Image (tube, rainbow, N blue to C red; front, side, top):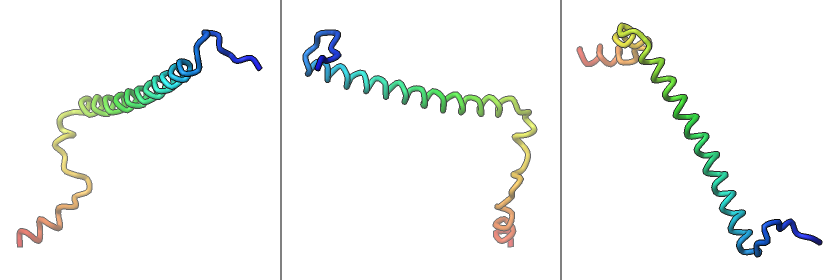
Length: 74
């Protein structure tokens, strides 16, 4: 059976090259995921900066601290 060894490499060198290629491929996939997450965070930050200043001063729509404030004031 003929091997597909077009570069005339010995088995150890070919194994090293295959492992290196697979590690670089995995690192590329990880980089794509990290950059995609970074773009999502940057988009949310850009939307937050685009909102008017008054929206940052509004009270919390779910005021969970109100019952605590009443008991502390008593």
